[in-house]
Image (spheres, rainbow, N blue to C red):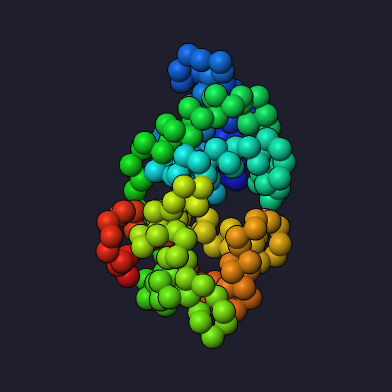
Length: 203
């Protein structure tokens, strides 16, 4: 039943459009809620959009439209979902989601969270793997076009890391993630807290 509901929701996302604001094109916020939740906090395999960096969201919409983000879910659902989304509507959509306060997922494995935190903050020096903290910030808040990790679900982060390790997702700054996967530390990753304070994330 869950798989059927998931496919129905994703199909609805692709075929229906509901305006958010007047403009060159209508933003498709209500479409997005079918998969990403009414508060944009994520739903099943769809990531949390609330609080995400607007430039990152805008870049992802562009990559979906240009078919350069080509993992299986992107090809099956998101390419069609954004095909009619114009530049102005894309900016409005990205800005809208960025204003929604994100919630913590709190779904990681707490038994290995401390190891994941150590990798996030310090990397794995002996394997020449840089810390995630250096780009994503002390609490996973992201910066400019570098995405927020704080609040993303464990299952989503794990799947993305696996795809990077397999070469399914290609991005110039992600060789460190592929190395991390090969290093065998994948399960040490966790959902991070959503705080954007200057303190380090708690375990």
